[in-house]
Image 1 (tube, rainbow, N blue to C red):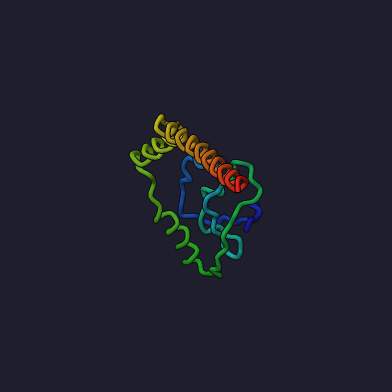
Image 2: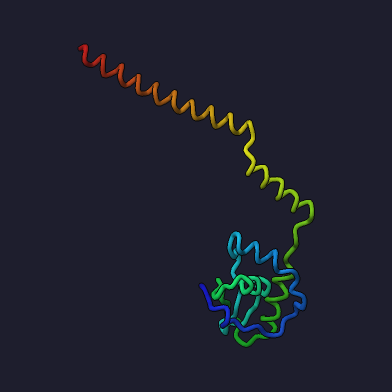
Length: 145
């Protein structure tokens, strides 16, 4: 469900430092918002503070949300923010490099991949003409009868 960003209420937050948002905004701009933000039935932000601000930076007027019912339970609201941030773990430098290497490999055609595709292409052509010749042979045998 989408909600107008201006309708989302941001109360006192435990996160003081929103950190660098340019990379997050670029990611969202490139592939979209992977996870919706979470708001209460009163449109109070529970999790997704950085995603919300990155989308604002991109000029979005609406954002995908998940609405959960918490009523007036202030502890539950606080727990949402805490657990959203506590459970995360950033990629290590090695994991980031692994991603970049795999992505580059996928984007760079290899000689082996080229020859495999070429072989498959010629096998399809050969198979097509083989079936066509077999069908022609069958029809000529029928006409000789």
